[in-house]
Image (cartoon, rainbow, N blue to C red; front, side, top):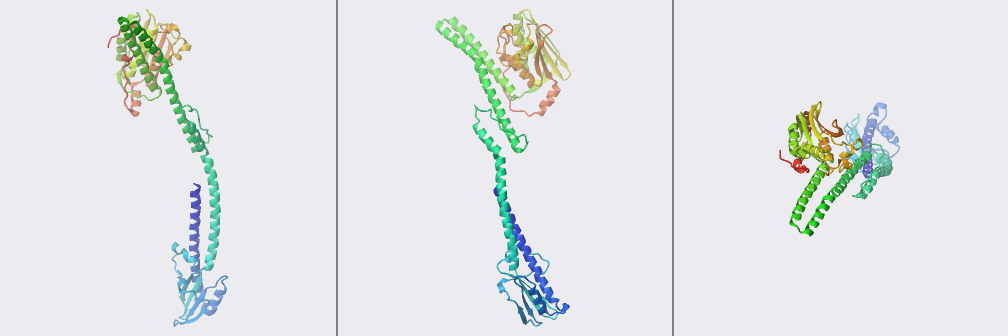
Length: 472
């Protein structure tokens, strides 16, 4: 940048020098015309041409012009001063035509501007003006310009280097910080000055990128930790049962062990699938495949699947839904219903009641699941939506601790929510809200559609573990 500034100043000085040289030549042309006019008008001033020529030559401080005087027959009468060599004569532009930029070298090299004019008595006068004086004055101006230009260029270069160094300081600092960034050191951030200038915005953008990368790595680490934590128990159970069965050698024991191992692998599969889906939703990388669906029919379908398990445990299950049509992802809607029913099935006792109610209200749909079980303490109602959250033994009943976290994530992904409170039946009340179908349809039509995804059926991924089930 500083080099470009220096080159620009030098080019500007050169251009000004050429312009001044051309202007000096034009000034010499005017002097030639003025001298010829003075000689031609001598008779009007009661003087002879010779007297006018002498006065004109004496008026010059430097080298005087050379003059030739001819009679009416073209004979040379007299020469005033040494006449320049023919190769050094340059015709003067006595008209209105300006000098061209191509003429500027004529100012140097000992040239003279020459012009002629007829006199009143029929004679002729030739006037030759040396341009050495013009060149001398122009040279002084050019040297002054070059000196000023060089000094200006040096000052500009110094200022440019200082400004550039100061401006690039944060960039160098950012580069140094970024060199130190790796998977173990993602907490580094660039300093900002709060000025809002491009450097500050650059630092803020890099900080945001680093924060996003840090959050992504944190999610990956959390995912790995969650997987290791949850898979440890079923894998250890599989290993222990396998070792015991291999030592016993009893065929019945081996068969029972294989059935248990199959159930454990199904647990592992469900945990992995739920974790992957939950992290996709939390990472905002999930794409909803919305369609108009009959929510009442989906509720009845889920109840039809889980009804036998509720009957086997002696739990009454009631449904009253007039929710109507919603614009949502069919597979994920089924997943919420399955998780809510599974939660109720695990945490209520024999003789308790579970009620599912769906209705429309202004702006959307509300589905509530009430039970008459032990309920959830107020201080625990937010924590139950955390991953792997399990409350006290009074509400223990197995499960991976992912169902409610996944259900809330799906509800919020649809623009709704899932909350828990106290039911009028005495137990827990889960309230699931969904925006109006028309509003969500308009929002979905404004969004672009990323690549399709593959999701397993939630009814197949979360079967009832406490009793038999039947297909809808």
